[in-house]
Every structure is written in C-alpha cells, then in structure tokens.
Length: 86
Image (cartoon, rainbow, N blue to C red; front, side, top):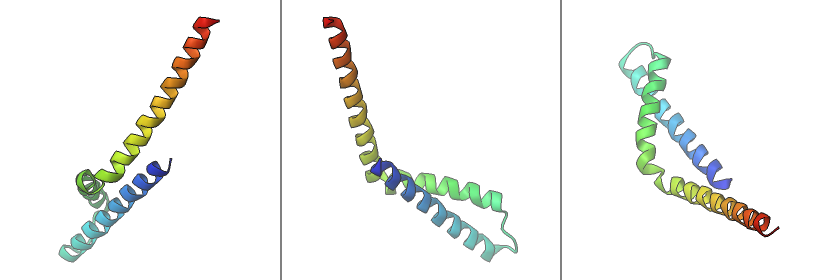
C-alpha cells in the first residue's frame, strides 16, 4: 500500500507542477489563462514526464502488486488442494 501512496503522490505533484508551469507561461504570454486548456496540457506533459521520471516508483508498485497477487494465488491453490483431499 505504501508504494501506491508514494506513486500517487508523486504523480499528483508532477501534475500540479506541470499545471503551475503551463499556467505561468501562458499568463506571461496572454492576458488570460483558459483553465481547461492549461489542465489538458498539464495532464499531457505530466503523463509523458512520468514515463521517465517515475519509472522507479512505478516498478516498485508493480512488484508489490505482483507479490500480493502471487500470495493470493498460492492461498487459492492451497485451498483447492485442501478441498481435493477432503
């Protein structure tokens, strides 16, 4: 669960940072900032940036999920084996 929280917070921080940069640059270039377009651009930029910048936390999260799925599968297999012997 820790890996999920860490990855989610990093992803959210990356999005907020991208939004701040996009809105800041846009406000310097124009009189008003269309929030919807700034959000869309920030979403795209943070998505692309997360592919490289958040690779390590994403892999840690995926490993944890795979480990948990393996434990659940082992428990289910043990339960099936127990039912077969009964």
